[in-house]
Length: 410
Image (cartoon, rainbow, N blue to C red; front, side):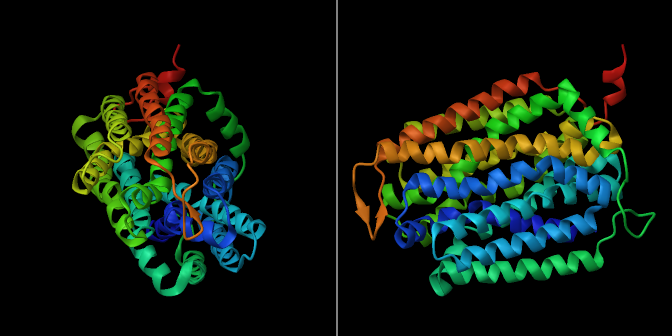
């Protein structure tokens, strides 16, 4: 029940990082700037953010099976539309469709985790689900670069789009929404539930912390490959291999953070604050050492960012545990929205920061940005990461249990 929505979430996460690999190809073929590439990448997050809360409502009301399968179809068709694009308009339309379809996948997987598994396992399952997404991020680095080298960026998107449609059909055929019934969602009352979640002041600290945390992470995934190509002179394939470092680290740190939070520390706030603080410190170190460190040290720094980046997996348990238990879908959707707004609202402007400091260098029709341009852009990311650490101080400590009734007590 969980694995098929999680598979579609893997594909959704794959699409988040894919523009990093094909950024130079897009610049060459369409003659666009870094700001346009940033906006194209952010279009995914705009669509994702726009449908995030409706996705929670739909999943709570109609069930995971129908909604996630339909989302997969839209995501697959969006990828195929991008592959067919002969101009910027269809490219953006396809990217927007990918984001729309992707928006239901994570909430769907977590709804299954909340419905089919004991509450004491939700934090760990949230982290494992996120780790599946990290596998998607890894697939959008070196494996995608290899596929693009063999089939071109259009051929790669055709392969991904077709595979997504097949996984969607499988999801619709196999998945059932609840252990005690064949299909169907929770029914009425979801709109009132959404208002209850939005009115809850304890919903907003995890929302805002995740906004800052994922804004920094989203820009790292977008610009790390162009940075390595421009500053270190690496090929797309070699840059993609170095860019896998944070994702490889997150494969361990994500589930480990969830497990320790659930079963050992039995805390949410303290580990979130400590890890987010470490993440901010490493962003400062990255911005201060751009172009100076040898590649092995750059890889180690990125790996360290992935180790402490596991803080984000605690966002969803906190959001769920400060809201009514039956509103798991919408509660997770609302706090998750924060991260995607963070990425959506910052990727275009950070691309513009790069453009503002471009010195006029070109390579094979694509802009080459100097170290100073990346330093300015990554300094913004460092500030966002530090902001997440500060906002985490406002989180409500739940100790791994739902505290909704406690919060309502006078």
